[in-house]
Length: 354
Image 1 (cartoon, rainbow, N blue to C red):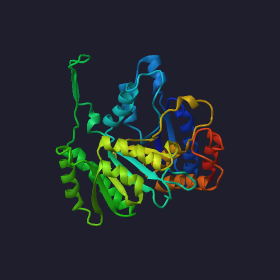
Image 2: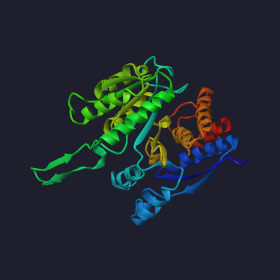
Image 3: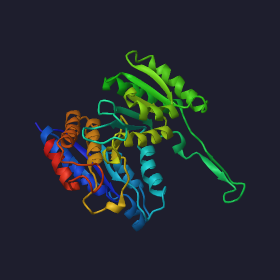
Image 4: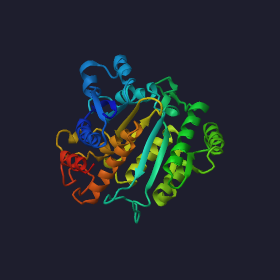
């Protein structure tokens, strides 16, 4: 009996994005063959070059097509010739909002033979997940400017938090923590002592939902304390849930303690809709076409994609292949140009280990 067919939208994006996605697809194809399912890959030309050529960022017709997919696989967005903010808002944020990808999921995991800047910390110490609310907060764009360009200019940016948006994020985090079954501890990261309106809502929702999950230990930490403990005692964390802005900040710190952007993958998730998976690093245009960029973050993002669409054993096999490749010693570093292997050789190595 033939396995299931999944329609996957592929956006290589800008800079080195297409290169790392090429290697990620190589690994996904190996997983599909081994685990008996198929992928119909639909390529989308979205990013800086299209914007420069046509002025289009995300046409409504393309968005309508994306709504019908099983998942989206994204390389990177960011072009040196396009003003910062145009592609990020017009493509990345619009996709999150339009497809209601209300969870940003970021595993922070140190793999074997990967250097961390944290002294004496090992893979046993750095293994937690950040669940970030992805469609509200400061990123909604609410606010405005008055008397712009004058000495009396006023700029207001508002953080929008709804009970619905906050609670569904928190509930997802509790369920995720329960299914992860590691330390069974969920930490709310906030700032209740200063942001007394927004995080009063977060805190009340958090402890109310906690009553439905007696097996999970609810925990709270201010965001500034969270950043300190991530550096000093990362082993304290299991799953962290937080708002859009704080999540954006602490996940970049998480990437650094797990070894850098070259291994950091993330998912923008709608649990009942279309989710999008990507390496969280940038497009790294200076390395474009040199076959030296690290594709492992994109490969890990592909593993997350497989788990989300229901092919959990295949997704786990992809992650294990990455671990095995790193353990073998052929990959000398996560840094571009210093891996000891080319981009395509890393993809070949991991695909062969799935």
